[in-house]
Image (cartoon, rainbow, N blue to C red; front, side, top):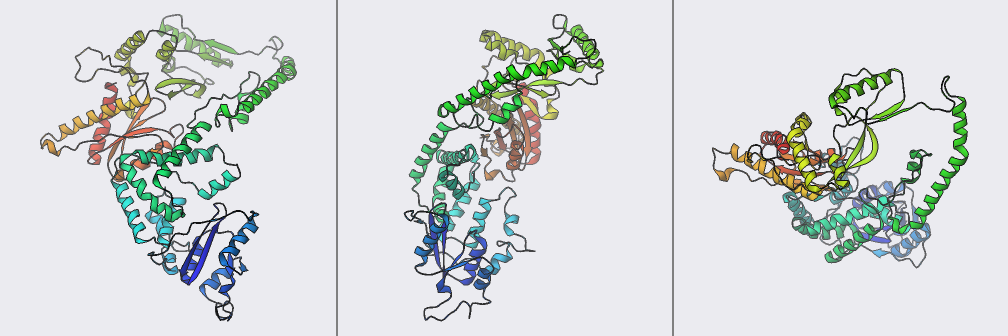
Length: 609
C-alpha cells in the first residue's frame, strides 16, 4: 500500500499513515488542507527499477489527483528528507525538532471509499448535497463539522468509537447546563504565540477553553464525560496527556491569564476626557487597547498616554480656541452681543410648586421654546410631563442610561433616546449616608402605593421588575394590609436564588392543582436549573417544552416558553447588552402547561416581590 506523512510546521509535529489504498490516499489528498505536496521517487520506480509513474500510472486515480496540483519530487529517506525540505521552506534551524504524533493504526477500519465519500458529500462535489449539513444543526460549523467529517472519512478503532458513543449517551442524559465549548484552531494560536502577536481576544479565547475544561472537572455530572474525552482527543491530535496534568495546567493557565488581562468588560482604566476635545477622539484613540491589559503591567505606557492627552488639551486651549471664539464673534446674529451663543439650560423646571400645575407650566414653557426654535436642554423629574398633549416639532426626549452591576443599578452617564419614568432615588439616598432602615421603609411605602401603577402594562412585554427598584411585597398567604420586611438580595447570586425559589414554588403549586383528581405520585417534580453566562442548556432540553426566565441587564426578568431552549438562549444573547445574560429554566410536560406557567409567572413574580 501507500504511505502518507503529514507535517505541521506551526505545531512542529508530524504523523504517518501507511497501508493505504490508492482510493484512500486520494480521499485524504482531497480532504486535507496543505500548502506543499512532495512525491517520493518510489512512486515512479518499483523495487526492480522499472519506471511506473509514466508507463502505468497515467490515467490512474493518484496520477490524476497529483498532476492537477503543484508538486515536487524528492528521494532518499522519506521522513528525514521531508522534514529537511520543510525546514528549508520555512527558514527553520536544523536544530529544530519535530515530534512524532502518529496514532497507531492497528484495529482501525478501512478509510471510506472515494465513491462513498463523494456520494454523501463529504468531499465537496457539484450537484451532491452534503450529508453533514443535513445531519448537523445550523450552528455547528467550522472545526466541529470538520471533526465529524474526519470521523466519517477515517473511522477510529472500535475502542475509540465506543468511547465517543458513550460520551454522546452521557451528554444526552445530563440535566445541568454545559459549557459553550469554545473552538479555536490550535495551529493558529501556536503561530500567534510564537510570533508574540496574540492579542486580548486570543487570550480570552484560550482562557475560555481552559475555564470550560475546569467547569467540566468541577461538575459531578460532567467530570466523567471530560475523562472519556481524553482518548478521542489523543487520536485527533496525537498528543497523549494525563488527565490530572491537563486539569492542573488549565488551572495554572486560567489564573495566569486572569492576572494579566481584563475579562467581561472589567477595567481599571478610564478613557481620557478634556472639555475642549470631542470625546469621540479619545474613544477612537484609546478604546482599542485600554481596559484589556491590567494597568499594573503597563503603568509606564498609560502614564505616557495621559501626558500626551494633557499636552494636546493645553495646545488646543492656548492656540486653537481663541481662533474659534473670534470666528463666532464675527458671525454672531444681528441684535445679539458679539460672541454670545444663545442656549437655554433649565435644571428641574417648575420643581418648587405643586406637582400637577408645575408639570403643566413646564409643558407650556417647552412648547414656547420649541416654537421659537431655541436650542437647549431641560431636565426634570416631573414624569407626568411625558403624558401631556404637547404641541412640539423639534423637541426630542433623552434619558440617562443605567446598568445593573453586582446587584446595584448604576448610571452610565450616557444619554440615550427615549424617556425614563424611574429614578435612582433609593440608591442616591444610600450613597449619601441615609440610614438603611429609613431607606428600607421608604421602599416598602413606595411598593405599597406605586408598585401596581408602575407595573401596569408589563404583561404585554413579559417583564417583571426585580432588584433595587422594587420592594418585596407580601405573599398571597400574608395577612391583609401587612408588608413583608424580607431583607433584599444584595448580589446576583442572592437575586437568582430568590427568583429560583419563587419560580419553583409557584410552578409546583400550580401543577399540584392541575393534577388534583389524580394521585399525588402522578405530579411531575419540577427542577429549576440555572444557566450562567457562557453556559448553554444541556442536550436533554432539545425538543422538550420549557419555561425560562432571563435576567436582563436592565434589572428586569423576561419570562418565556419554548420547545427550542438552546435556540432561544442564543437568540436572546445575540442582542446588544445581552451577551452574558443568565437564565433559569424548567422542563414541563407539554406546551399547553408551559404556556399556562408562563402566564402564571408573569403575573405572580411581581406580587411576590
